[in-house]
Image (cartoon, rainbow, N blue to C red; front, side):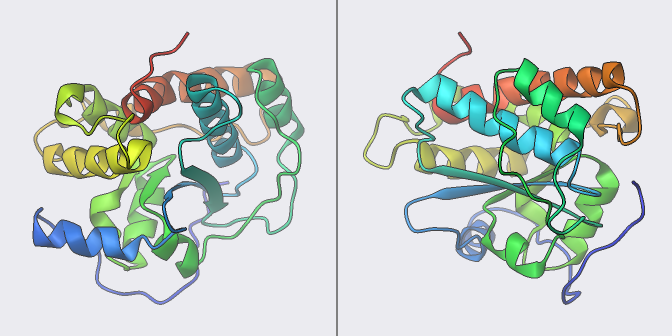
Length: 233
């Protein structure tokens, strides 16, 4: 499932720097009023990105309680997405084992509109990240591999982020977290190229899917903690 793809107009890649440039990035992630939209990207949108999407939703609800997401909307798509396809059976089984809900999922092909709406794009691999950035839409500062974002988030002092209990709550904190992570990129490099990759379990037996699910869950934990200000139970 590593065939490169992507649909949409190719525009110049991401922008660099912070300040006014970050304002442009915020404006490009239009999303839903009062919400912050996270887009998870893999290849077929039937294994890794469905796992990441549903595990993110589950973790947010666990931290915030009562089925709440704190105004964070989570979705996924694939650079060679199987439009309308259900997630792989093994992926659904792993979600259930983690207490997450696989019901109602349908695969999507990555489109320009998905990138335009996203305030944060988290990809399975560096190739996926490059494909998202190549679509344009000033996506460079808000697109990371999941493991890259996790590494950067671990280095951010949570005390410097807005209080999630403030008027704007988790949404304001999420914007600040992405801005801080973008500022750190280039300073905190991966120890190896493999460190930022989540490998494709497509066609593998259930034990491999479980290992990928555990890998994703471990990478998401500090991210959701930073977003919500609530550690895992």
